[in-house]
Image (cartoon, rainbow over all chains, first blue to last red; front, side, top):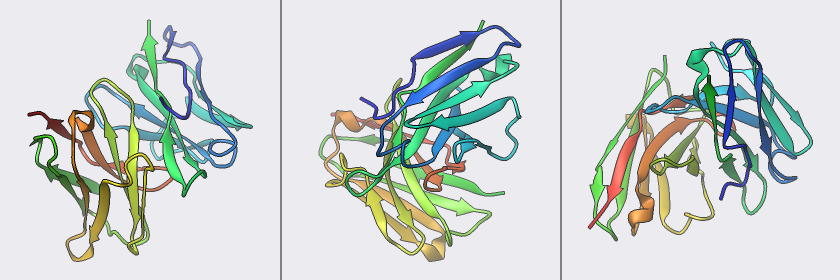
Length: 111
Length: 115
């Protein structure tokens, strides 16, 4: 069971805006920056958003991140067919000696 | 352009030791953390651990007793060893650069544990 909770799936039509939530706690998202990854089928994850809201190099500005308290969110505006993928949030967790935790993953489907 | 290329045995028997190596091309180990992550078939991502370029390592508490991550600076490589594997360790294993933001990833290696 993942430390960070995400909805299993989200869907939208082309051009729509969808958001993915990531719920954590005071020891992870509440204390540290949130990160988002996109994973296309059969490929390695790709860094999308770091430091809560900074887009990684080459990431379209359709992708945006935010954080409030112990939750983080990823928004995809102007949804495109190539955005159909699995999305994972992640954050450093300060409990024990500190370790990196991933969310459970959200499948985005473009209808 | 930084590239990570990983390799290692893909089929193990229970109780054997998993051993994977990741070579960094187009960049240096210096100044970065280097991580290992795994993904069981059809499931989510799990962080295994990291090593700092200066050599200090940190592991997932759930795997700490069985994991060792090491550096080979002259070869620009870092490695993962996981002892006493079982079927639960069957996964695609990835190497990656970074700590709180993993910006470069290896291609992934499927490791299957089966008798």
